[in-house]
Length: 323
Image (cartoon, rainbow, N blue to C red; front, side):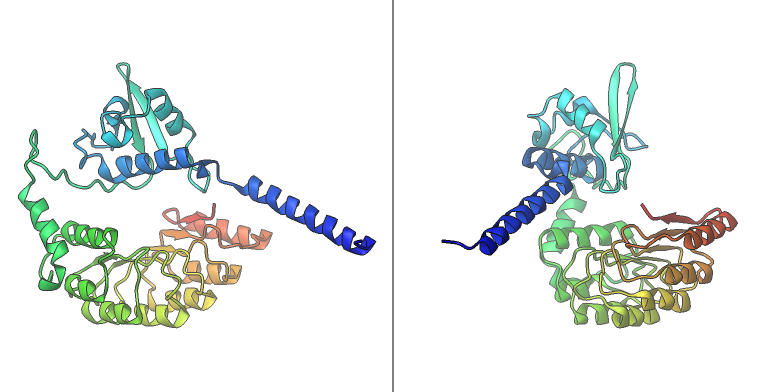
C-alpha cells in the first residue's frame, strides 16, 4: 500500500505535469496546425519567391491577384475565402502582419509585407520551353565542382546558385570554393552547414564582402571566430548573426572596433548581451542604420530606454528593432 508521502508526491507530479502541459498549450503557435502550417508555407513561398516562377503576373510593388493564386497547383484546392482569411490573420512571430491586401475595380490583390526576392520565370513567355539561362543555372549547380564563378559580376546569378545549392543540400566546402571570389560582395549562408574550413575559405577568397548572412549558424560561430571574420572582412556593412547563441557582448564590442562603418547588424535571439554592450555598439558605430535586438532577453531598464531614445532621436536614419 503506498504511503501518504508517495501519494502526495504522485499527486504533486501529476499537477506539475498537468500545469506543464497547460503552459505548452498556451504557448502553442496557432499556425502549428498541419493544415494551416502547410497553407502558410505555400503562401510564403509564392508571395515572397515563387510567384514569377509559377507564371503569375506580379506588379512593380509585388501585388498578385488572389484569383491568380488559386490557379497555382499548390493552392488550387483552397477557396478564395480561405485564402483571404489566411491573409487577414497571418502574423509573424513578432506579431506583425505578413500580408497586405487591396481591392481595385472589384479585384482583390495581395502582397507579402516581408522581403520579396522573386525567382525568374524559367520558361519563355507563353510556352513550356525552358530558358537558356535556367538550363545553364541548373547544369552549373549540378556540376558546380567543375566551375569557378570568379569574374561573374551578376550578384543575382551567384545568389541564385547558392540558393539552389542550399535547397538541394549540395552546399559544402567543395561547392563553396567554386562560388567564392575576390569580386564577391554579398553571400547568404543562412541555415547552411559550415565548418572551420568554410570560414577560412570565405576570409581568404572573398575579402571584399560587404553583406554576409550567417543566420542560424550558431553551432559554429563564437566570439573568437566572428572576430577573425571581421578582421579579414573589413568592408562588411551588413552582418546577420541572428540566433548565433554562443556570441556575447565581446562580439558587440568587437563590431564597434573592427567594423565602425557597419550599416546593418542583426543580433536577434542572442541572450548573452548586456544593455551596456548594445549602447556601446550604437554609440561607436555612427553609420549604423539598422540594429535588430529582437528576443535578446534584455531587461529594458528605464535608463537604457532613455539612452536608446536619445540616440535614435539624434540619428533619424537609425532604426532599432526590439520587438
